[in-house]
Image 1: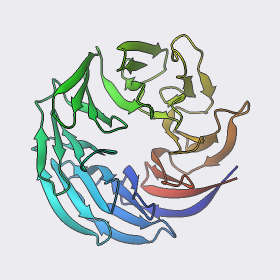
Image 2: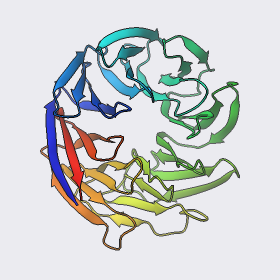
Image 3: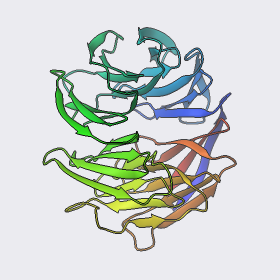
Image 4: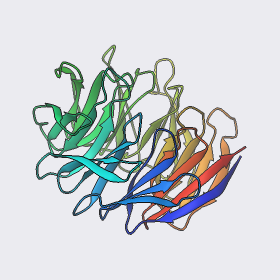
Length: 336
C-alpha cells in the first residue's frame, strides 16, 4: 500500500473543516478565519473562493446530491452556496451563538439540514427556510449525528443525548450522561450510538434494546470517533495510540482493544466510506494507514510538516484529504 501526493493547497488560516462534494469533483476547505476554498479534485486548482463567515467559519457540509454546500460560522448564520457557480444562494440566521455543527440528512423523503448554534437546534430546508426549531437543549450542543436511515438526529450536550425524530419532531429517546460529550457517531448498521467524552471515556448505547456500555482508561478527552463500513470496528482517539474496539456480538465492553501505536497523541481517525482502511493522525504530523482485519495491520506511514486538524476520504475512497493546523491542505492518493 502506498500514499502518494496528489496535490497540496494553502488556506490563510487553520483548516477547521473539509468536505468532498457527492461526486468527488470538489473539495471544500473551510479556514478558521472565514473564507471557504473549493479545490478541484483533479489538480487542486482553486475553482472558487467563497467569503464564508465574518469572524470565522466552523463547518461545511455538502447536500448528499448535487452541488449545494452549507456552511456555519461565528456570525450565527448558516449559508448555502451553489458549489458549481461559486455563488451564495441563501442564509438562515440562528442568532448570536456560533453555528458549530452541520449535517445533512443521509436519506429520507426530502433533503434536510440539521444545524446547531449554542443551545439551539433546527432543521432547515435547502432554501434556508426553517423546517422546524426544537426546544433549546439544557446546555450548549456539542455534537450532532444523523441516524444512518435519516429517521432521527442524535443531539449531544453536557449531561446527555436526545434523539429527535426528523419527521414528527418529537423526542424518541433521551439518555443521561453525567459529563461533557465531544463527539457522536452511529454505526452504519444503526446498532450502536457512541459518544467520545471529556471524563475521558467512550460510551455506547444500543437504542433498540437500551443496553449501555462504557470504556474508560483513556489518557485524554476522546474527540474523534469512526466506524468501519461493516460496523464491527470502532476507532477512537484519546491516547497516544489509536484504540480499535471490536463491536461485534455483545460489543466491546470487557474486550481488550487493538492498539495502533503513534509517537504523539492521536488527533484524527477516519475509516474509508466503503472499504476497510483506517487513517489515523497524530500531533507530530504523522499519518498512518491500517488494515484492522490483518494480523500485521500497518500499511503505510507519511510524515507531514504540521499536525492534521481534519481528515476526509473521497467518495470513491481513492483520495484522502488532510487539513492541517498551519492551513495546508494535502490530498494523498491511496494505491495498492
